[in-house]
Image 1 (cartoon, rainbow, N blue to C red):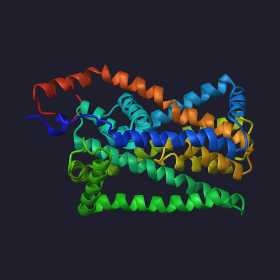
Image 2: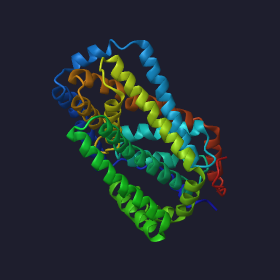
Image 3: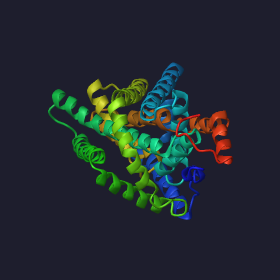
Image 4: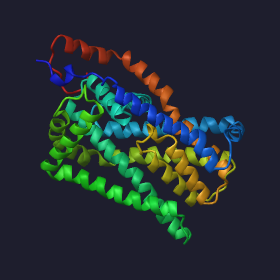
Length: 362
C-alpha cells in the first residue's frame, strides 16, 4: 500500500497572489539596496563598486572557504536532526531549499516544502522530516536571537554608552527568544500545545498555498513528530549546537574579513555587535533571505559604532555576496545533483510499483 504522503509529494504551484507577494518583496529589497542604502550611508553604488574592486583575490578566496565552512556546519546540524542523512545530502537539501526560498513565491514556506520534497524522495518518513524541520528551525532561531544578547553584554562591559539600535535589538531578541523557547518547550511538554501549533501551521499553509495545501497535514505530522522531537533533542543536542556555532563562527569570519579589506577599523566587540544585528535581521521574512533589510541594519549598526558610512555600505554588500547571494548558484547545482541521484530514482520506482516506504533512506 502506498503512503498517501508520498503520492502527494508535489511542490506547490505558484498562484497569482504568491507571485505578487514575491514581486513586492523583491521590489522592497531592490529599493532598500539600490536607493535607501546609498542615501543612508551617504555614498553611491559607483563608490561601493570601486571599493569592492580593490578587494584582493586572497580575501575573496578566504571568504569562499568560510562560505563552504558555514554550509558544512549547518549540514552537521541537519544531519543531527535527521538520522540517516549524510553530510553531502544535507548540503544538497540545504542549498536547494535556500535557493528556492529566495527565488520562488512563498519564500521560506516554499523552501520548507522543497526540503520536505527532497528528503521524502530519499525515503525519509514525513514525521522524521517534520521533526528535522522543527528542531533545526528552533536551533537556528534561538542562535540568531542569542547573538545580540551576547553582543550587548560584551558592549556593556566595554563601554557605558550603547547605541539605541543595539539596545532595541537586544530587547527584541530577548523577548522573541523567550517566546520561541517557551513555544518549543510547550510542544515537548504538552500534546495539546503541539496540536495547536499544528493547526496554526495548517492555517498558514492554507493561506500561502490555497490550492496545494492538504488540510490537517501539519497537525497530524506535529502530533506524530512530538516523540521524535524529544528523542532528537535528548540524543543530538550537542551536535545541533556545535553545527550552529560553526555556522555563525564562519559567517563572523567573513564579516571580519569584509571589514578589514574595506578599511573599517573597529575593535572586535563592536564588530561582533554589528554582525549580531545583521544575523538577527537575516531572519526577517519581508524580503527573500532578508536581503536589503539585513544590509541596512548592519550598516546602521556599524555607523552607530563609529565606522565610516561609505565603507560600511561596501562591507555589508561584500558580506551579503558570500552569506546570501552565493547560495543561488549553489542551490541550482544542488537541484541538478539531486535530479541525477540514483537513490532518489530508486525510491520513485518503488512508489510506481506501490511499494511500502520504509521511512529510511534507501
